[in-house]
Every structure is written in C-alpha cells, then in structure tokens.
Amino acid sequence: MISTIQAFPTTDGIFVVWEVAAMIPDCLGFALYRQQQGKSATVVDTWVGFEDQAQGHKPGEHRPSTEWPVQKTNWTDFLAPIDAPVRYGVVPVLKDGATKVKPAYSAPAQWTEYVSAMPSGPLKPWFNRGTISAQWLSRAIGKDKKPAQTLEKAISTKGNKIRDFLKGQLGARLLALLADAKKSKRDVYLALYELNDPELIAALTAMKGKAHVVLGNSTGKSDATAKDTEKNAGVLKKAGVDIVRRKIAPSRYAHNKFAVFCDGAQKPKVVWTGSTNWTRTGLCTQNNNGLEITDDKVAAAYHDHWTAIYADGSKSPKALAVAGDHEWPFTIGESKVSVWFTPTTKSGDLKEATKMIEDTEHGAVCLMLNPGNKGLLGPILEKAQDKKLYVRGVLNNFPAQGKDSPKDQLQLLAGDGQQQVFKGKQIADVIRPAGIDKTADWWEHEIKNTGKFMIAVHSKVIVLDPAGKNPVVMTRLAQFLRPRQHQERRQPRHHQGRFAAGADLCRAHRQHLRPVSLAGLAQHAGGPEGQGSEAQRRLAEQPHRQGLGGDRNAVLARHHLTPAIRHDYGAALPLPRAPHRPRSYAARPTEASRCFSRGSTSCFRSRSELCQASGLCL
Image (cartoon, rainbow, N blue to C red; front, side, top):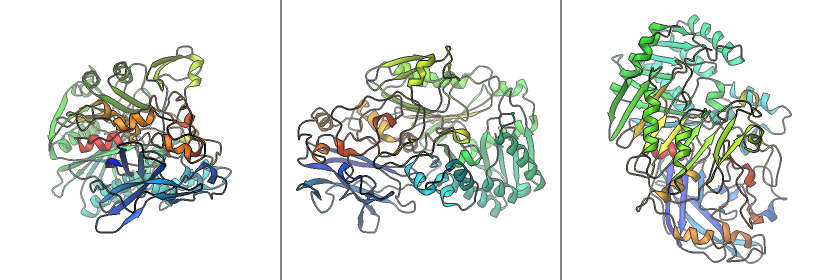
C-alpha cells in the first residue's frame, strides 16, 4: 500500500512524507509510528480528529493517530527526541462501520532510515521555533486578555518554558557554545547589530575580557530595541567586556550577527552566523536560523573582518567597501563555500547570486523578510515563468512600504502558478503573515504578529535545486536587495559542489512554510530522486471515486491534500479553495495558507544534507 516513505530531520522537528501506490479502499488517513533506536515503536499522536468530533473535544486534546489519523501524506513530528535516532512507518487507517476506524494492519510494513534531529559535521544549521501564531502558544498563555504582555514577560524570563520552547535548539546551541568558551577560558569575537536578550547578555558578561564585541546601534532611532542596545552596551563595559561601538545607523546599518570562537591555542576555530539578532524577539518570536561552521580558514576570514571593523569603530572607510568586492572561496568536506563581506562597491555578491538563480535547473524556494523593489525576488519570479520549474516562497513584508501607496507594486504567484501584479490598494488583497484571530472548530484564537512581534519571518534564505546534483543554499544577514549605501551584511553560499553561504545561512525559515513546498520541488527534478507519484496525481484527479456523502467518506478522496495542520507563513495570495473540500478535514481554512504558491507533496532524497535541512525548514 505504501510505496515510499522518507524522513527529513531539522532541529525543529522531523518531516515525514510518504506515497501510496494506488487508491486504498475505505482509507480515512494514516497512523504514524515512531521507533527510537533500540526501543519499541510507538504511535504518534495528532491533535485533530473528524468534524463530527469537533464539538466534544477538549482544548489541546490529542489522540493516537490510529484513532485520529493523519489526513494527508506528510507530517512533521515536533515531539521527536533530540538525543536519539528515530525511524518512521505508516499504516492506512480504514473505515470500520459507521463511527469507528481501524488500522489496516498491526505494524508498518516499510520504515524510513534512522535519522537524528541534531545536525552533525562541519556545517551545522540550527533553527528556533519563533512562531507565535501557533495553537500550542495560545493554549499555553490561555485566555489572557493581554497575551502580548504575557508573551513579552515569558520571553524575558530565564527558564520560562515558553521561552525555552520558542528559542529551540538554536538558542540552546548558541548558549552552549558561549558556556563552553567561558569554561575553557577561550576568546570569542562578536559583531552584533543589537542586543537585549537576558541570557545572551549574562553569558557575555560572565566571560568578561574574553568576550570581544563590536556592537552596532540598531536602527539608530529611538525605538525600544535601540534604547536597550545602548543600555546593554554599558552593562557589558561595566562587566569588563572588550567592547567597541559601531554607530553608523540610521544612514547605514552595522547589520552583523556573527561570532568567532577560538580553540585552546586562541586561534579562530568556529564561526556562528545566521539571521538571528541577539534579542529576545530574534531568539524567540521570529523565525530565524543559525549556521555553525567549524573550519580554521573560514573562522580566520571572519576574524580578519572582525578586526577591520573593530579598528574602524563608527567609521566606514572606502577601503572597507573595496575589500568587500573580494569573494572568499573555501572547500569544506565535499562542499564549496563562498563568503562575501560587505559593504561592497560593485554589488558582486548580488550579481553572483542572480547568476546562480538564472542557472537554476529544477526550481527554487525562498524565505525573505523584505525582498525590496530591486533585489533577488525579481530573478526568482522570472524563473517562475518556466512551467517546468517549481518555485515557491514566503515573504514577510511587501517590497515597498505603505499598503495604499500608488507607487507600491507587488508581483506574486497565484494558486494556479500564474504571476499577478498588485498595485496600490489592490495589495490589500494579499495576505501578510498573521495569526488566525478567530476560533473555528479545533482552532483557538492565535496571537497576532503586531507591534513588537510584527516580524514573523526574519530568515533570508534561497535554496536552489535542492533535489538536483548541484544544490545551492544562499543566505544573508541583510535582505536580498541592493542595500542602502554601505549597509553591512555577511553573505555565504553553499552548494554541494559549492556552498554559497556567507555569514548567515538563513535558517531558512525555521519551521514554517515547511517541506510541503520543498517536497513538491522533487517532482520537477527528474530521475529516481525527483519523480513525482503517478498514483498521487491519479488520486488528486478522482475526488468523487469513493463518494463524498458522509463525514468520514469525504476523507477517502482527498486525504493526501489536506492543508498543513501547522500554520504556513508568508505574504501571499489566497489560494483557491479545493472543489468538494471534505467537511471532515477540520483543518485550517484555505485562506489561512500564506505563500506565493504551493505545490503537491512528493518524496525525494536531497544530495546535500545542509541543503536538505535548510530547504525543509521552509
């Protein structure tokens, strides 16, 4: 019955996807089994049942997927153990009389390979869980009349369960690196845009003179984070931290977010970079990524650049921009890595990135905070005109500010894959990242991304041909656009033969849009790793095959197309509602899906572990 099943790990959860060889009579969904290495298999729970059970369920109630089956052919296991390899199998769940269900057989006939949620090797991507428009968080905060204030208090408190869950393994790993450096009395060199996270501040002050910090002045304005940064600069200095201020905003941004960790001989050894600002919101309430690079040469290059901006302080001489015109190529294992430091005088980094996008063979997925009017979103949308390519992405902001401005223009892909242009007030028809602010059957009212939590997607990542022979990951600390003069960023790129990564491997949208988009890319890649399921296509074309008369009968026809039980993020066009949508799905309304296009789900095996992890977190 199950023709293929595969599991793809990230530090946020493990994504499992499977295919069926043919229509399964009386199938209402699938039971998912997880087996930790050396232990017996257990049934994975789900949080959504059938429509006729919606009224009687309790908030947060979950049941084994043998009772509440997964009504699609993919699932993200957010409760997978992080300290042990696991594997997965699925069993069809069949209709059993008028009101009952039963597994088709007692155990899975086919299992995935064992996978681990923790990354390994010299290139380690890390992701947080910075999604606040989530059902679990709504339940954790409860019926609080001022949820934003409650959330702010939670993420400001060390040891708070909400904070710890939101910062995820990204936060845990960063703090562990700092703790290890303190214990071993090793030097750490940091360049930061802003700073107000209590745990990170405590870790730096504890290191005293072993911490060397170049700290920007945030936006250079009078907002709360900028004021916090000013105050915390004094806290670091008082503690004996070696600190230099780089106050170049608002005319330009010192947009750095990297750290260089030395070894026992005080030589640069490890680089930490990514999209994550060292703030409470950066760590906890925005979707962010971190990239840990263990390589002497890369670490030395970052340290050299740190030394240059440490000496420049609040100046930005032309020599710094001229030096930014130089690409730094490296080889790490089987991957080639190129690093660009900015500012530049010729935008060589963006030109190289554009060329890579133009050379894409199978497709691209991306996450962007603010794509800008003259950035890399344009070349990606140009590639989307090719019907043979799979192109999907998530935008947090519109390219121009001001929703009603007649000068604003937004080009996005509709659900049918056609590009549409929105101007002025028409942009109001495009959905921005936001929570569902109403209750509906299984769904609780969610916290909105407004005020200090207005940024949902802070990652900046582009993944090209992840299922192809030469996958590429591009990341930046700043946006994928031509920056204001001398805005600073670090950009790395990673390919399987080359690693287009710079200083921030944008953790690719941590765990949001998710692999629903990336998996579909495999269908366009060709070959055994990229072939889509003909059986799935036949299923999609036969919505009436088993009839749509009853609550559970309705699931039979379209169990593989249920929208993600988790939220999808991004500025996007409302997707058209599927015809004859089964009432028993109890999944999020179609209008809640936000991406500038979505594809069907398929199985594939990525050739690049880093590309895979980065892409799946889309």
